[in-house]
Length: 267
Ligand SMILES: Nc1ncnc2c1ncn2[C@@H]1O[C@H](COP(=O)(O)OP(=O)(O)O)[C@@H](O)[C@H]1O
Ligand SMILES: [Mg+2]
Image 1 (cartoon, rainbow, N blue to C red):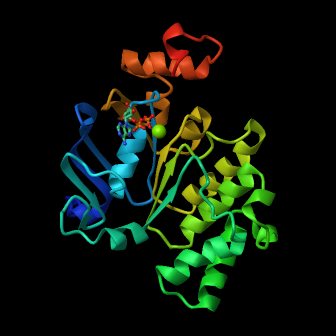
Image 2 (cartoon, rainbow, N blue to C red):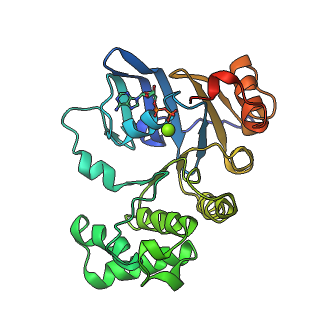
């Protein structure tokens, strides 16, 4: 008897993010060049690459913090690049975490997590507090709910920022170098939180220089240089045995930081 395995139907909704031939210029400077990339539900994709290669711009195009010059971006079934898109609605489903934590300094930790839920999602006070506490627990920050951001370490602030992003119940989390502003001893706590989110099945697009994290947690690693995706694949391939010379030389520099090349000194 022949077993018939029919593939599941492919629709755009199968991808949480679908980027098609995306280009972005700032004036004469083309910083993203014909980028195509899909991220599936539950996938963790890490984007690596040198400073100025377009990583942040790529992330910012996904929630339209930058307007693409050409190409298409879908988040779920919503086309972000459709001029008629209700971007506020799309953004509600996307949690974004930046290098700088961007907490409101005059609000407590708990208030930082409830304010958007109340104002944007129109949740009741009791619901928003319950959601906030659940997410503070998730990032190990429950004990600081009454603290102000300035009373917390950078790593604690970033964990609160992650909890705040999670409080929108996003289907997708974007991280732009979430640990780059942290003292080295605080990086691990934030990466541990991200690792647990990944284990819970969160879809994540993460720009990072943490190669050990990318190797361990990413399903796929994308190497960008000069506005292009130069290569992508399993972390063991892209980081472990890169095909492209540009990837090899980038990794060599990241993994051997004492070898400083003179053209990097002003970067
Ligand atoms: N708003 C902007 N206006 C002009 N140029 C920009 C702007 N944002 C980024 N760029 C330029 O685009 C290029 C890519 O930047 P970016 O996406 O921040 O790279 P990365 O995150 O990989 O360091 C850089 O040359 C940067 O100077
Ligand atoms: Mg950047």
